[in-house]
Image (tube, rainbow, N blue to C red; front, top):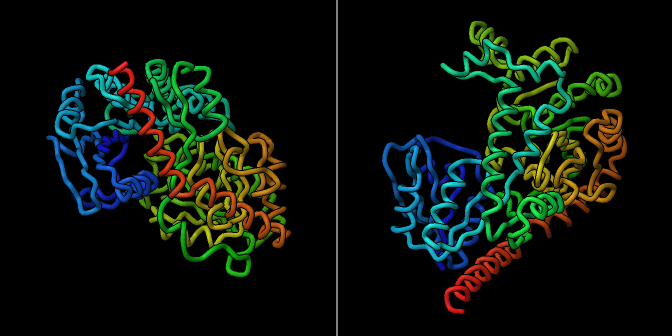
Length: 429
């Protein structure tokens, strides 16, 4: 079977081959691609990126062919050329949020090419919940930030929310034309039943990055007591601002508290002049900085910088609690990774997260707005190591099924085969 993927990110193997430097994004996609290639699928992966000025193609040792094309006003030429060169039996489009996803679907329909679309996030819902938990003043666009954004780069919470809404519009244009959709949570299934009732829905879980399937598992004796790990804090959807609200109370109860955050210290570039620019033109980072300073939280926070999969794994294992305080999620891979390792997890009860983690069995879910419940969840996992370990053990067993690489790959292949069978039946009634 020949399959062409369209993805919204340069995958790590392609980035390394073309000399774009290390990238830690898209690891779960690469893990699934590897499984498909090992199953005998002839897989090509296409991505449109400004990193190239002309189309690039490379067949790598992993058995996967990577195609990079430059962005253009009329992307159909490059996408049509990819169909001509690769001659896939089926196209799999990952995501619905960008114009390029929509263009790829349009090219497939025009060419009568069988295709399926995977839901990643639901953009309309991301827009709706983008600024949850933030002061109402951030609903207004700062005129100077709007101007700065036109000439360079700036971070306006309101403008970013509008960008997600625009992606939601692209998504709403794409979904009604999709004959097949792949999702994985009760949340996305319900949304798609309403917004794409014509589509056949496949429920297929995702594989995670390879290091999380082997080696060490979490143990209380090996972790740092009273430590919290948060996967990132770069933009509001991840909800780091909610954690800052409860940290003073946690610190009063646990003076040795430490919070470790994946990614750069978003509110500081290590230079006074540059930091002044951050303070003026990067709203979310400025808000975090103000809260950290006002509450005296800096000594308790450690920003770890970009982490590889192995580095993430070690940080999960070293932490007492993994916290996912997001405003909205579909199926957060960070929660899945923590669960697979047996790390005690507390997470906001948003979107599709309850499809990954069973409250009171695998960890603790709490309502996003309920700060007292969030604090209580962390305290429960801190104060009762035996209960935390039991949650983690059940979480690992649950995640081993959810993220079973063999089963998930089998179900994906079965979906591909069903789509091709349906296509052949339509051509030869």
